[in-house]
Length: 455
Image (tube, rainbow, N blue to C red; front, side, top):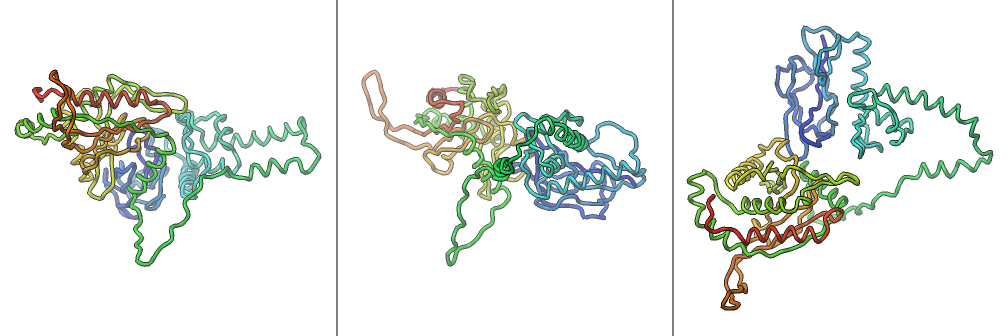
């Protein structure tokens, strides 16, 4: 019988790994074509991995809660009626049947790869800042042999997209040893025995690590609640963002009286005509999109020393879940939608988020985000930027307040509907001038809202 490698699929832009949350099949159980074998989770979205072949689950290569790189074999399926040999699931074109020796080598590499991932953390990253990918097996061998990331970067890879394969690394290790031996006579080491000791000591001394908080002392009656998977991911992402981006927040108060009056006038007609509830969020998003057109350098990402100016305006909308956790689905190409279109996308994503029906693509590709803290009665907030974006806006609760208005007859005091806008931005690339002008422009669009407009 042939063996088929079930591969961890790619589930969206910039998704490099996923966590196995549940196996739906046990070893020895039969699997139908396109039947789901396991459940996985990545960036807060749960998915199922179906089998592209029919057979029997021969071996699980990972356990529940293991984190697996995209493109790695996660299970071996035995296919009835096929000749012996391992069939890689990632292959996109037919290849000659593997010999028993080749099949044994491939199977061994699958096991070694699994052991490399499960064995613990590695010093070498899976993907460098230049975008080069290193498999867990290559990273494990490099770590065992003392090969630095700089050395790996110099190795010419023969794998897909120039990746360094296990064979490439092993060949390099052979020539590396030869080169070192031939180079040593030309540059003899000093005779003093103490000379190499500082070098060895410096290599053995790990780089200073950030201090971690001490364990929290428990008191009588305290209850320990373990974070669920989503909460852990949120915590990691928030910490990463604060470590990556120096956050600055600017505030503006906006008079949204016209918006409140217009919505009150048309919301019933809107529901009857469009079949959708009209909330304030789509109106805020419409104003943000207009301001992004005016200030396109707020719609960017940072990649090392490079700035990526985004062509698409994709608005992420922070959404609270019934569990108390948070997710940020994305309205793609929001600048191409009118208010009705934005409203339908907002309602659809919010409903599917609350019912755990989002797919991986729904939360990918955001270029700017909004958080409606006013829905909880908060006047303002200082939101954390979702990476790799560089800015996010929080819109506060709308409150009636006495406001001084300038009229041709002089200043008057009137009751107006007011709200705060809080704009958090990455000070690496967005200075106070741009960050402040942007939030002011959003407020201008809100205050200039046409009370006589159509949908």
